[in-house]
Amino acid sequence: MSEEAAFLSAIRERPGEDTVRLVYADWLDERGDPRGAFLRLHTVLLATAPDHVQRGAAESELSRLRLQCSREWLGAVEFEREHLHAEPPVRPGCRCFIGLFPSEVKKGIPPPELHAEPQDTECGAWKRLCELVERAADDGRAEFAPLGELQPGDREHIVTLPPTIAKLKRVRRLHLYGSHLVRIPPEIGEMDSLEEFDPYTSYRLHWFPYEITRCKNLRTSRVSTRALYGNHKYSPPFPRLTPGAFAGRVEPRELPLACAAPTVRACSVCAEPFEDRRAHRVWITLRVATDDLPLLVNACSEECVRALPKPQSGYTNRPHRGGTSRQQQQG
Ligand SMILES: [Zn+2]
Ligand SMILES: [Zn+2]
Image 1: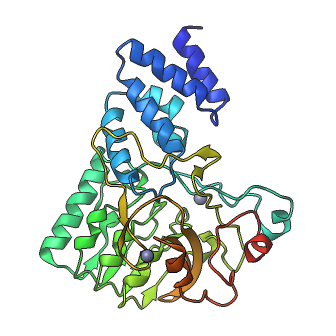
Image 2 (image 1 turned 180 degrees about the vertical axis):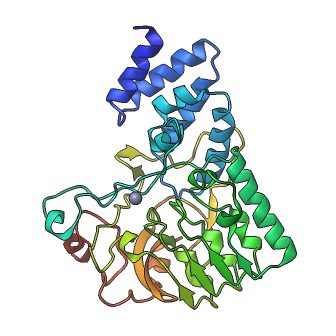
């Protein structure tokens, strides 16, 4: 087995371990191979929650580095996007709630992790989506159904929406039916005219940003509730929000970016900018439009956490950090 094949097989055998990935990255660097930089940033992103303030910038940088890597090689190191590296590509799956039905929750199965799949911002599908957002912002349309306007096979590549959705000030109805989205950016809260939100059958969309509560005109929603954390039907547990940790790894406070990205964000609650230290992140379930939605709050302070509204009745009765079972969350 060649030295390189040995590295790849070690990564496959121990996907949760960073050491072998970083040793391999050094080995690539020493040979002037640009894949070393990709592997290093990719390893950092595995430890970075999807709601991290620098995540978008890091994903853009990773996407640029990815351009220099072969699909076969990516298939061996990018486990979270393996469906895209399959030949032919397959629809992405979701195993978050497997083994977590009420009868099984008590057995101490660990809670799911937030989907951490990075968005490829260099692929054609993403570029077309960004163009559609710009066009919709320009023509001031009231109805926006971007996924239906993409080309066949594009949908699998889209896991989030661009932050430029903040420009869609006149969109009243947002249709995302049957998407493979895993997260919605907080900028959705700036879509002032939004009245109707329809991500129905987006089975990998388990949570929403608290900022969606800023859409004061939002009246109608159609969400596949069985796919939501803490939903009434199956009560699947919420991912644990541990300060300074993600997916069993140490979460970096600042990411090693080629272009510096701001570490300041707007508080989900008071909207004031603050230096994000990942300390006041909580879950809360609230009625939004016509659904009870699990919302992720990135607050600036405990004061702002205390200022949150009372959770929808029937759910955990205070803001919480998730965990193994509903009982613990209610603790
Ligand atoms: Zn999932
Ligand atoms: Zn605040």
